[in-house]
Length: 235
Image (cartoon, rainbow, N blue to C red):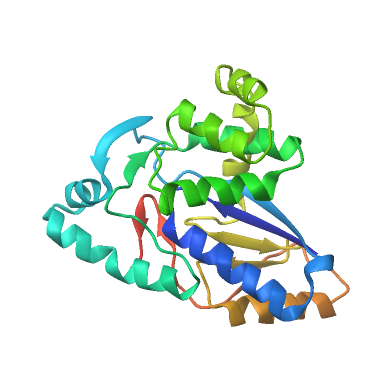
């Protein structure tokens, strides 16, 4: 069973959804039968590579409100994160352009470490408030998962994997991705948003019981549950 996951490293629900999917896989006992593939998506390609604005300042600017009001907007997200064992550091997080992070993740995938790269990048941004738009930060992270820093630096200093990242974004859009996280199972079922683990488990069991594969996606789960669209998260 193949599960393709479209996500962005600055999307809080992508990290929450990842944890819920992992819980569902454990609940169903299907780990040996599932191949999870991570796909690139950018919520806001216009974000500067390096930004000095905090998450709260960016939200306040976007929604034309105060920084204090912006802080309140993240409360619900943090509460949901805590239910899956995550504690987000919105206080210190800064906006970041994720294109190079996605490029490096594609390179890590070619080196056989897609899951490690995805987890490390999400943790770096949300738990550790690291600036994942900076090349030095990305190189440190890639080295931590056991990959060669020099080779990674060569990737970042070139246009390597730009085509792959853009193709995945376009591919997702052609499948109906309008926000992330977005999960596609066997190119037959689509699950949008950070659904409860039970919803993922139900979908996995359903697919496990089926033999044929339809070319048309059927949407499972609830609408507008834990999803980010164009730099706007449904809280």
